[in-house]
Length: 291
Image (cartoon, one colour):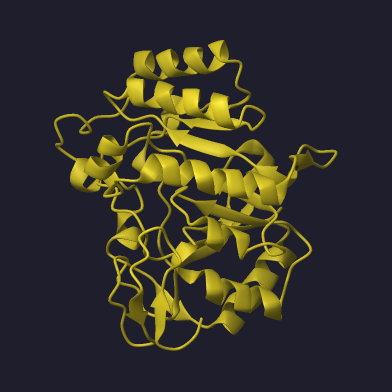
């Protein structure tokens, strides 16, 4: 990333100045890598974590403002430690040596240029996963060609009104559709090894929110229409934290009935993918941010 850059990495296109000392854009991040955790992660989808885990790099900051964010300590409060691209490359090498199945870049968007610098220093032989909110610029995804093997985007909303109310992104739906299309065009068909571990491709995630089964079914409709051959990870792990605690609609976990309603609809649409046990909706599954 160039010094004193005018940032346009995310769809907000702030063109805000970012230096090593400060950042004036929506994300508020400066021009240095900040990470909150680097470790093997066992709680991703089966083809991602598999037996040995996914080598997760959790970046601080975010381009959304989800009021229910389970990782709010790093996305909003920006807890973490500054490292250089060289150090990130060294950490990636250590993760690879530990036996993880892939390198999983979590919320990487504001750091894309610096991540590319790190991968230019050391590109591992295992796949690189781009794990994001789905709120991405097509140009940013296209600039990652040759760096990313697997895309793991969210598709959070079927309603822009809801997206704006809960995440501050009034253009989420069309933006996510375009971004995921670009990811699919780049990654191609999904490929797995003989043990079912993912080598390349796209898995689309969706988190079911309490009192919002209509939103979830709308998301599944969009996916079925636009990306019918891509598996969906239907997540039931929602926990009311951060600003969602006490919220009139979001202030509780989802019910078994709500989750079944959405999973039944997914089956009816004949969408392949993954579901969760609702026991995963527990704060104990939120990692310690202890890098």
